[in-house]
Amino acid sequence: MMRLRMTRREWLASMAALAYSARGRPAFAAAAAFKPTPALLDAARAEGRLMLYTAEFIEVIQETLAAFNKRFPFVKVDVLRLSGGQLITRVQTEAAAGKLAADVVDHSDAALMKRIEDLFQDYAPPNARDYTRNALVSPKLWPTLAPGWSIAYNSELVKNPPRTWMDLCKPEYGDGQIGQVIGPSGGTTWCRIMFERQVLGENYWAKQAATKPRLYPSGAPLSDALVRGEVAIAPLLYDIVYPKKKEGAPLGILFPKEGVPVSYYATGIPKTAKNVNAARLYLDWVLSPEGQEFSTVQHGDFSVLISPPAAPQGFDPKTDKIWVPEFNKSQELHDKWLADWNRVYGYRQ
Image 1 (spheres, rainbow, N blue to C red):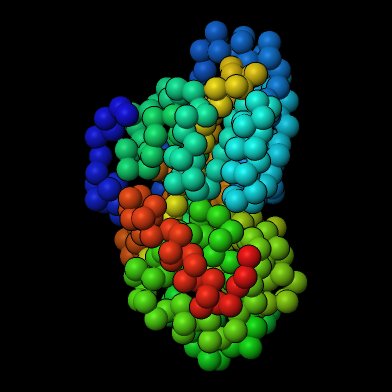
Image 2 (cartoon, rainbow, N blue to C red):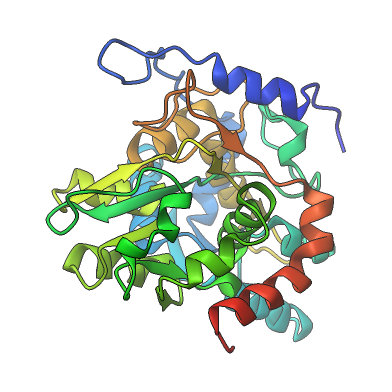
């Protein structure tokens, strides 16, 4: 792996140093426009399409592709969106049969992608050295997204919202008012439950489960249930609730002071990709400052560029803090802690 000269502590410090304007919005200069080489443009234009397999929320990925196609309308992108576990199974099954159709695989669980890195070809974006190495699990896989967790609530139903993760254990929010994404749903949720046990304490799950939360298979149906009022409060990835709030949904969203669990996507180009140049053009754009700024400003994702072009609205680097899982620990604890979570919450797969 190439040497990217920034430690985790240095990256956290760079996030903490981000300046905010008086209105609480990030005061950043606009990112420079992405400029691919003429040769890559010509080759991608000749291919004219790519197949994207992703675990990202469909609304988010559709907006991202619309922005990409505004710049590069000659690349038609077909999308297969599956939950994290389903996506890995699909990739492995197709690869074993010699029929992997994806030109790009975009996954929320870097640990699972690391296990199948041999399926991917060598790839690095032009600005590879601008990424902190702690976000890279393989030189073939890159962090297109870095979603962070927030607490969201239906502002029409909740007049005394929770302010901290520990507040989600309060009896006043019991009897199914809280919705939870099941632990085994994917890499981003695993990041959250790892944070809960490591930072909030070994008893946190039991205390939170005592409120009898309603369990959902993923963030998409849970966020819809929150907007409809079927649940009143939910820990959710910011990038799924922030766009809904912008569109007028009755949502309040906050970053708890104990920390914001942030996980990294791992995205790569399979060795069997048929549209390699279109895939490279897409990933080069997403990973460029222009693409990262779009993701942060429009969807509320974090960026793991050493000098991020923006930070999510509502996140104040002066007072808020992020929590990033240690990769080796994440792999080591994954199966056991997920089994523990299933037992505590009474969830059966």
